[in-house]
Length: 385
Ligand SMILES: *Cc1c(COP(=O)(O)O)cnc(C)c1O
Image (tube, rainbow, N blue to C red; front, side, top):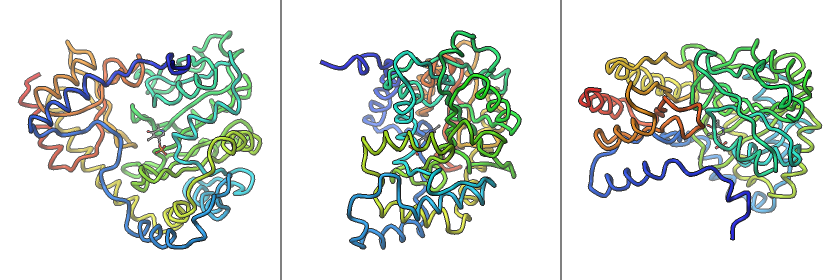
């Protein structure tokens, strides 16, 4: 009954965890969920207010423009300039997305023919590989190893794959490893991409979720990047807007144009009222972003202290709201997350859920209060692992 593309989907690895979690909740057990990467705090009120006004205006009720409201694209371009120092043309180099997941899933349709190779990091957000496959492409895994600071080793990609590769996904600050990349890595990627004729799609969903003064660079800020790639930004994590579905793509004009052709044949754009609220988010005070980062930083510190206490070696991440921790000796990632859930009522995501190279790690999302994280830490100490 199902298409080959559906039948080829990887098995859903979280079924057992979902099941155990549901059972524990049914029994009335207090479960601390550090599983999903979804901000727990509400969208800042000035953004909500802007949405309320926009939704009352009938002008927002009609089909949006395919490429997105020009005013939103202007706001996005200005935001890119103010936060990342890059110059983007809002007309030719900017496209509104219905969240960056939508972008990741659809962008291969514009560039990938059957048999083309898509370079996909692993561990990673699963949609890179699936988006490549849905377009008929062949994902090729580029491992992110701790010994390389979770950056891909581009020299290790075999020549026959390079010859067939047409597109590459990268993502820094990174989900799930929380690794960051500096400009020299992006420079290396540009050179690699030019030498091998590979389109680069940089998923920059965590660009603003940073700690201790760290500033994450835009891929497009390095020389030549505009010739070879696009970058996807999302309002989801930055402004606690995951439910709203809003993001944007910026970068090379031809690539944006091709991507836009796919989108105009699949969706009819993001709701104008949401784009108006997005303008408020991007052009208003960014204090809400630094306030959230302070909150995540305190949670990060609380969880790190606890993990160090039980002997897990984790370095403090400079960005993202994830802690990527090696699992204790004697466990695999699934086994350890099962133990945390069943014996401590803690949900965390087994690394293998992000691909085979995630094995040996577990991901905690900092989406609970410091009090709840401290409670989770006490429960982990009681496990005596
Ligand atoms: C959360 C996340 C996304 C999806 O963001 P949306 O804009 O809500 O679709 C994309 N990429 C990564 C790496 C993410 O973690």
